[in-house]
Length: 89
Image: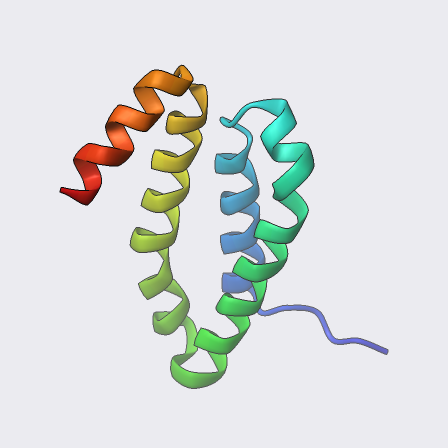
């Protein structure tokens, strides 16, 4: 029998899944399950290494990256490319 995730991991994954919902349906369908799986594993690793504080430490970089990525998916291809070039330079 598999033990349930600590509450901080369950909450984090729930929030991540909710934020993923702002992205386009096609993107969520194609990449959502694997993104959630990777995020869940990152949470587990962080929890094993540093407890709840380690998981909370993932929130800002992971959630901000997800929100920026989802918003970029809503841009037209030209806007997305221009934004990508600005971020690199």
